[in-house]
Image (cartoon, rainbow, N blue to C red; front, side, top):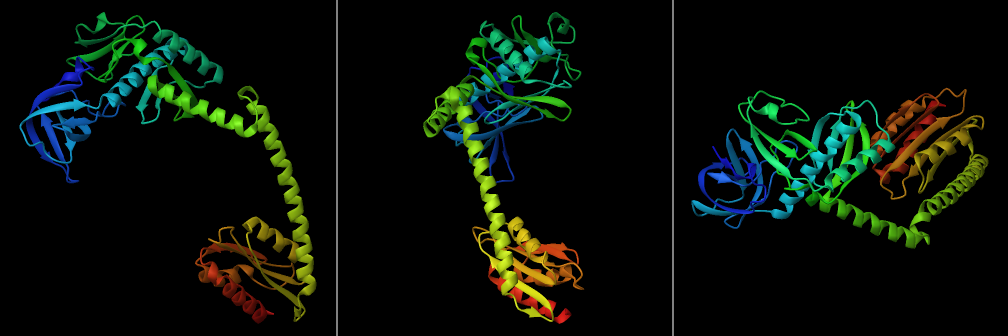
Length: 402
């Protein structure tokens, strides 16, 4: 059994211990079990600590029964070891975890919401609230209330309780399992609940709680938030982003949305004009191709390749062509980066042809997939260098069926 130093003091950064056991791990790493440790193992939504043992990196920590396993790439050379926690990582986790308790307490007080899930990620953390709905105004209220609680700089205390003494504490939620002894985290006058994680000693050390967003997730409301130095980094990034956008759009921060809306409106108008121009070009191209095509047994077969075109543009040209009577359109359109070719095979109504079958025969040449009906079929594939051969095969198939 490993003695857990962090259970009573989250601020232990360095300690001495002895190696009690070593365990070979499947990936070639080694698991080291110490007599006592300040390394927190992953659990309760909180990632594990990292650090060093005798100067060698500890890359993961997990619990196995009553032992704590420290994952290392090599075994320390001595039985007695000196260990150090990655303090920046540890304090970050302390800020996020205590911040979560405060945010959960604020949501419980404001909305009667129970926290039914917690996850601490590398960039942000999330809590899931047992609520049927949520609004942006409620987000602002929860954020304001949480920050008002933390600036009181209330003490954060650790208690060890038993079933006989549990009633002495103002629990926000009861323990999820039966227990002989349980660790409680109490934030004076704000919150008290079972927790095994690492926490700051006073709420003022968190600095700030920022809720970044909310969403519905698995019949709950998920809040994404950052605390402390993460919140500062988030603000610094977004402030820099605003400054950069302000410079590019020649608009101060308060006018950015209006400038962006104006830019979007201009882009939409340009897109509409471009779409209209492309439609007109497609009509003209279809007319030219039809007039230039020589009929075969009374049928005009038009095989054509379009560079830098989308599947929708290829299909649009095909529709224009087969609007003419007795016409077969065999088209190949190439993506802008020439990474894929898109085939569209169509024919005018009344022709006794099966364009789906003709396409199916051509698709293997371009290593493609697709399908369609008797009058229209399309598909794509990456073998662009065989597109011309695919069109030739399709044209020969059409002629054979006439």
